[in-house]
Length: 60
Picture: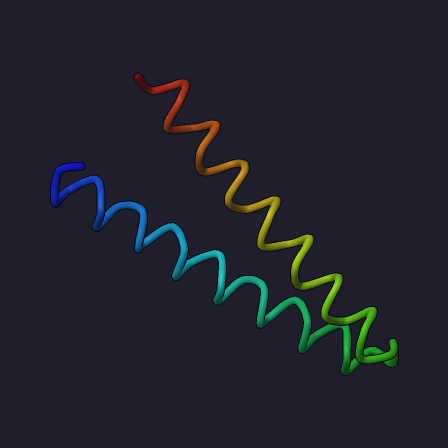
């Protein structure tokens, strides 16, 4: 992998992690249980990474 690809992957992971933490904190503040908030954050992270990788695949 080239350095640009590695940096792009790290950026995608960092963005997905930030989105996941934000979603889980929002879910927790809205009154759901802790495990459900974690699952919400994980689902959000998987969705954002899926959208990113789909965009990369469509670009090439």
